[in-house]
Amino acid sequence: MGRTSGRCSASLDFYGGLPQIEIGRRLGISQMHVSRLRARALGHLRSRLLDLEKQAS
Image 1 (cartoon, helix red, strand yellow):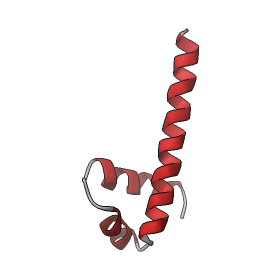
Image 2: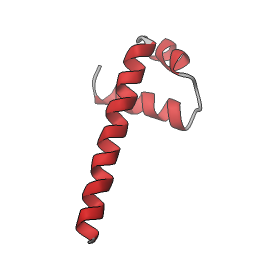
Image 3: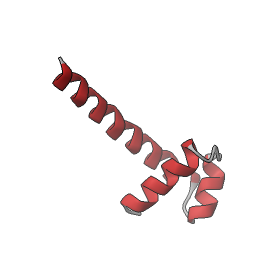
């Protein structure tokens, strides 16, 4: 799974409000993989926000 599935997973999770099991079913991946993609996406977002905060100060 590449960047596209991670983005799709995040979109379905945050905008669609779907549970991880349903996201996995729609993407053809396991709920555990959806969980890992979510954790990776949130980690990336956290990192980007911290970088922006450092630049602002």
